[in-house]
Length: 128
Image (tube, rainbow, N blue to C red):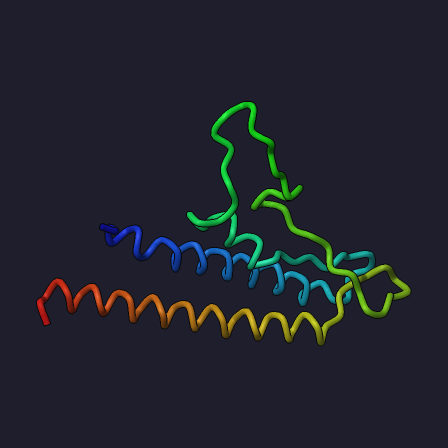
């Protein structure tokens, strides 16, 4: 039987990743006019798979073949621009703003799912 912590941990991880991605995207937007600034991002899907219990296979013996994606959870990748800038800046403001808006919407949706889950747990505890 899952504990309350187990039930809420996925949403907690998702919120942390969404918040981290919002910070990265906000940094990209803030540096849109900085020469030679390279736009960064993380893949939410790849990062959440690393945290999911049913995600990648774990290595339990030294003779097992390792699978390494090449990136740790703390690494970000650089975004390839559609149009290169003369000053070396790879931030495309419209793309960054769209990504930020979408990620913010998904953050809010995750909070709503988490609130629903908490309300169900409270109802179960109260016996409603």
